[in-house]
Structure formats: structure tokens, C-alpha cells
Amino acid sequence: MKISIDATGLGQAKTGTTVYLTQILAQWNQRKDLAHTFIIFVAPKARHHFTALGLDGRFRLRHAPNARFLRVLWQQTLLPVHLLQLGVCVHWGPGFVLPVLGLCPMVVTVHDLTFQLFPAAHERIKRHYFPWMIRRAVRKAHSVLVISHTTKADLERLQPESRHKNHVTLLGARTLPSIEPLQSSVQDYALFIGTLEPRKNLRNLIQAWRSLATTIRGQTHLRVVGTTGWLVQDVIDSANEQDNIHFLGSLTDQALAAQLQGASFFVYPSLYEGFGLPVLEAMSIGIPVLTSNVGATQEIAGAAALLVDPHSVTSIAQGLARLLQEPELLTSLRAAGLERAAQFSWAQTASQTLQALQAAGTHSP
Image (cartoon, rainbow, N blue to C red; front, side, top):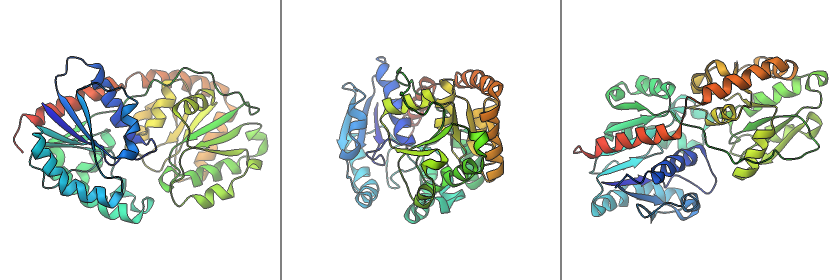
């Protein structure tokens, strides 16, 4: 079976969607029993994500445009032609998008509904384009993959007709490089990882951190890791090292693993997530987690994390204070997080995704 994959939405930086797709491909690459051919359309700026996987001859990379406008145009005009010419049996859009005029069976992944539910958290062009595209992709698809029960419920509330085609495929935690935590003059620190954009709620996190008395914070620092997005520069500018806050920017996988493994605890009070992969990855290596009591982070963490109201600076501050002052809480969260994270695996995600693609490939569009 020929399976095509639209990876054109990926950029040079590694995002959650990049991790999602590359982890699934890595799992398929390990399965020598699969006789399928996988055709991956990817822009030159994102090609390195796939060459690093060491994919074998069943996986073929094909060129797609770099520029955003050209990509969107290509997806709806030339991509359907390529699928027809290549004799593709089923096409997968792993990032919300399908060619509306495509003739072969199709599967789409919907990661979250933030474009509809939290439009102000996105750039203007995205909050107009993606709601339109998601509606059409869901209608077009033979199957819709959603990465949490939270996203499934949101999608079915917005598009009730999708109920019969939605499939939950929970994600897994990557095996992080086994390296020693970075040596630093800062002995204790809390860690945040994520794109620095409004939805990640960095503003409330920093306000909560700064509101803590010095006697509570002590010598613990807050380290913020991630690529700067939009509408957060004023938040970054307002923080300083006098508050024990440090912005580290985007890091390599090895440096990121070192930061995570050395953290006293992980903080992720996002306003809304379709899954919350950083939460799962922190729990998987025994790092205590503070996260939101809304969206999928509550679903994924369950009782294995300290949950706070992300809209309340006071609630976040109270949660931070507990983690800073209650060592027995950190101990219990470490154990609970490891137990919870063991219930998720990328092997299962990859298997369920392949089953959906194979089932769609046996049907006419």
C-alpha cells in the first residue's frame, strides 16, 4: 500500500507536531514486517527532521514549497495531482490539513481546537485559515485521529457529524538521552518548556513566581525554555534575573534533556492543550509536575500532577509555594508521575495510526 504524508506544515524548529510525526515514523521504521511505501512531502527547511531518523528505503521524501503561502496553495492544487500520479492508496494529513479536492481516501489528525476555542491566542492569519480548513478536512476524511479524549469532545461539540469517524490515539513519551544534568551555579530550579506564546500562559506563571516571597522562593530559580512566538515580548522584558528568572531560548534535544533531568519540578500552566506532551515527558523521568486543571493536561496528568487554575495567578502561586515548601509532595508526585506515564507509548500510537490508515486505504473516497 502506498501511503502519502503531508509534512509540509513542519518548519526548521522542532514543535509538538514534529515530535508527533517523527516518533510515529520511527516506530514504523523499526517494524520490518511492514511492506507499505511511505511518501513524505516535506519542505527543504524541515528535511533534517526526517534524515535524522535513518529511515529505510520504504520511506521516500519528496520536495514541497518552503514559503507558507506557496505551501497552502500547493496543498490544494498540486498535491492532489501528485497523489493521483503516484497511485497513492491513502493520504494522511498529520497537522489539521487535507487537500479538499483529493480523490484518494484520506485521514487527518486534529491535535486541538484552539483555533476555534481560543482564537486570540493565535496569529490573525491562522485563526481565519485553520477553522475553515479543519471543518473541511474533517468532512473530507475517512477517519479523524484526535490525540486526547478532550480534543475528541471538543471536536464533536463543534462538528457533531464527526462522531462516527473520530479515533483517539493518545501520544507517548520520548526516550530522552541518558546524560548527566548540566552543572550550574544554580542548584535548584523549576522548569518551563514550550513555545513562548499567549496560550502557554507565561504571563500568569511569571506573575505568580514574582509574587512569591523571597523566603518561599529561596535560592530556587525559574528556567524558561522555548522558541519565542508572539505577543509575549513584554512578558519576557518584564522578567529579570533579580527574580531568579532565566530565558534559555530553544535548545537541542541533548541540552533539553539535561535541563529536564536536573529540574526540581516542571511547571506547565497552559490555558489549553490538546494533549500536553511536555507534561507526560516530565512525568516519564520522575520530575514532579504542576499543570492546569483544564483541557487535556488534566486528562493526561490525572492525579499524578499538582493541578492549578491557569486563569488564577493566586492558584498558580499557591501551587508553586507547595512544591517549594513540601518535599513530601515532590516525592509522591515523582512516583505517581512515573506510574502514570508508563500507561502511554509511541508504539501504541503508531500502531493505532497505521490501523486507521490501512482501514481507510481499503475504501473508496
